[in-house]
Amino acid sequence: MTALFTPQLPDRTAREIVPGAHHIPDWLALEQQEWIVDRFREWVQGPVPLRAAKVRGHQMSVRTVCLGWHWQPYQYTRAATDVNGARVLPFPDWMIRLGRYALRATGHDAATVGAYTPDTALVNYYDANARLGMHQDKDEKSRAPVVSLSIGDTCAFRFGNTENRNKPYTELLLASGDLFVFGGPARLAYHGVTKVHEDTAPEGCGISGGRINITMRMTGFDG
Image (tube, rainbow, N blue to C red; front, side, top):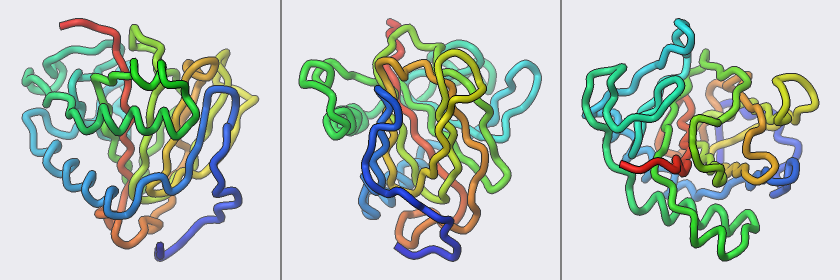
């Protein structure tokens, strides 16, 4: 992989960050990344466009398109009532399989893997100026693991504790193709993106600039 600029990536071995949170670098091959980027270009064509949500009246710098369920602070709906009222695209079967592969790769037992049926994905696009403040993923009824995939520019990612936004937290870099899974005791850990390193997307990943992040979850909701 080559890039115009590569930040220091001191530890590129798979590891457990804290109990329940696992990072596997380079989990997706370049061909897989490019294929997913092609799907992303289809998703943003609608029926619900890429949009920046407003949280407590402030517009996020990250833009999102959703699959399966539409996330809006602080709830999930089938229709994007805060955008254009359209129903979001269905959650793809291939992503369910990918989510199960991710759990298997991070050491989850067969029962957990078999029961994992994600039904929503928040597909986020970060430009060079986008950030994501420390937050918990707690709008879901289910506490099944969250599977996160990164494609494009490398980001500085902060993964914290379950009590507050302050230390202790771990700082790491998520590069194109990386997998991050958090569940169990780490499921409600605060986490955020503090920086996007511009011009670090590897050639062949399908995107020349910016970062695409897919987080798939089980909502636990019916309907």
